[in-house]
Length: 354
Image 1: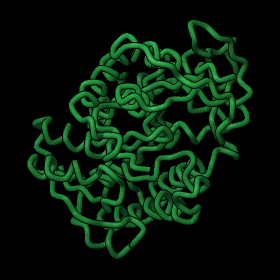
Image 2 (image 1 turned 120 degrees about the vertical axis):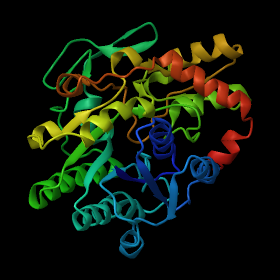
Image 3 (image 1 turned 180 degrees about the vertical axis):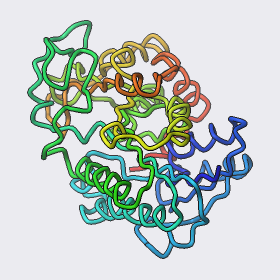
């Protein structure tokens, strides 16, 4: 099968490309990237050595996408993945929309032209901020957890039925719009389309920025003695996220690429690590202290835009439809990040220079 991975030199794209190339499935793997993100160049040589064919392409430019070789499936792993994108002064709101939504449109046109399927890697940040901020939570063992269940959520996490109405952040809005367009292209042009809403992706080689890879950022920063802060929520570090290693997506992607057409409602899945993987910043600090030794963390109650106290994804639909569940534990993932951080003392400077 001929596969094209967009954002192939980013963390998610490169991890998936390595896994597919090493799987023995004999896929013909190509990838495209614009190589503008710090750290992306570090993945190029390894992917080429694995036989992945790399193409320079800016997905915002339709002419770049037109030049890509034909394929059977597109795995869209390209995005500006920061919830602060478009408002933090590092990239304009127009650039965010052009990257995340415009790029998906160009890939959908490419898929239409080549009669290819498309799998969109989306995000938990498509879910509405106001109801997430208003969830009834209690604190236990240094972490927030739901005090009760409600429509679209429980202690197991958010389901795909949780509200997605605005506001969801500019980043979340571009991904939600990309989802809608992808599904419309699928129905209009009889293309197989799947949308996988990922929780926090984490693992060795993840770029170390707090707004994109909090687990990698925290572990690398702890090891290097950089200042860390518990922002908002009383400055206690009780805010919680689940985590998922991108390689755990591979069995699901293989099943989706071999699937017959499904009802559109079954094409949107939560694929986070779930409650079993969820950790608060306080708990992550405890893990780092046990691994590397204790150090202080600044208690800073100042809120940051779009921060939320608890986001955990319930992947029950993926398990029912595809018999899929994550295989790597949080301990596995954190240990992998720590080993990489110890081997690469320059990683924060390389991948997050700002």
